[in-house]
Amino acid sequence: MTGLDSLNLSGKRAVIIGAGRGIGRAVAELLATRGADVVLLARSRAELQEVAAGIIAAGGGAEVITTDVVDDVSLIGAFEEIGDADILVNSAGTNRPRSFVDVTADDLDTLIGLNLRAVFRASQLFVQQALRRQAPGVIVNVSSQMGHVGAPDRTLYCATKHAVEGMTKALAVELAPQGIRVVSVAPTFVETAMTRPFLTDPAGSTALLSKLPIGRFGTVAEVAEVVAFLSSPAAGLVTGSSVLADGGWVAQ
Image (cartoon, rainbow, N blue to C red):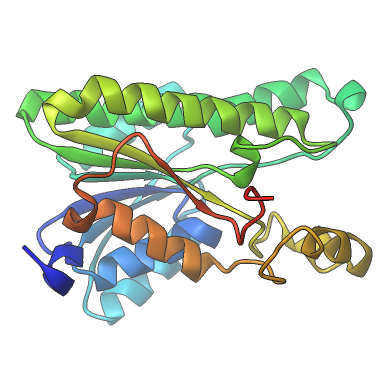
């Protein structure tokens, strides 16, 4: 398989966690245009149905499964409903920027629960099904540039994303003999519902843009393109790697 054919995902079934908005939605829509049948997971049925309707109207295939990924019973039930799948994209996540001394126990539980534990458990359930079928697969973890650096008021967020990067590497080594690739994409700041409040604040955005060599923030579409590549046969040699879609932030 060469050229554009190697980017084609026809016949593949892709599970996207956090598909109702932001990066997850952009990933779901792009994978569907590349030929994948997508399974959309999130808590909001209304958001998922809107995404699915657009995909189906464009001629793609989409299923909706509502789940709370931090609730183990709910997540297990979702994967039982999903059945066989070829690709898993872990794109759900959150952040609560605050100084280290002001981080609360609830902050700790929430960020570790969604940013790390849910990624671990979803990956585990996906791999268990793949191993039962003796089938290859791909896991793409949406991490962050903050999984490679540190930043004030983001100690907890950085901790969870560094953990995801470490988990990605360890899983890649463990699962390579079974034909399962595990990779991550580490975006810079992109405008989503989570980031919009401070990206649209001139004081905050000016400081952030000064650290971006390309001079602008990213878009969800740009991140989705990286995820689509990593999910495809074109990336068959790529595992255990983190692709920095960060506009040069970490290179400085």
